[in-house]
Length: 186
Image 1 (cartoon, one colour):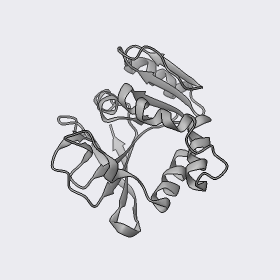
Image 2 (image 1 turned 45 degrees about the vertical axis):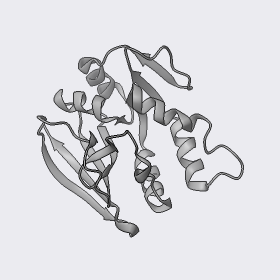
Image 3 (image 1 turned 180 degrees about the horizontal axis):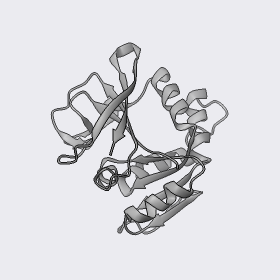
Image 4 (image 1 turned 90 degrees about the horizontal axis):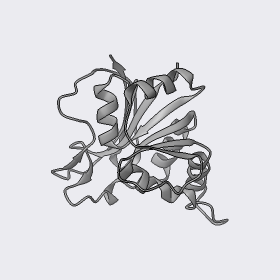
């Protein structure tokens, strides 16, 4: 069975965006971006909420120019080659290739997707991840902690969902970013 992996770039105090919705402080440097690319390589399908999809769809064309940064080009190629499922009751349609729109998040359908998948699945966006965590679907959590405290905003992890976590990997980058990987114990 494929794993469902929730990945997020967060502030030290656990937010993916500040109270104004800004996340410019989360832009990865080349080393962090290359690390993200390597972790995303085995992902065959991304599951997104509407907001995360709207952020990520830039990769449909970004990084494709001949003079594009090689690390960004690598990510763009990975992203475009991956299937995407967007969960939204308000998004009128999807505008990227290999993407389908689902009007509601159905834990049983995601469970079936995990069983049928030949490669791991990634889930992006704290709202949709919270629903997957609550349903016991998330197998791994990958966090990139940035050395910034934003004081509030959109939390990377939900309140009230407390899975047991086992630390399985740590990597420290220059400039203070720390990668933490956890296995979720039911």
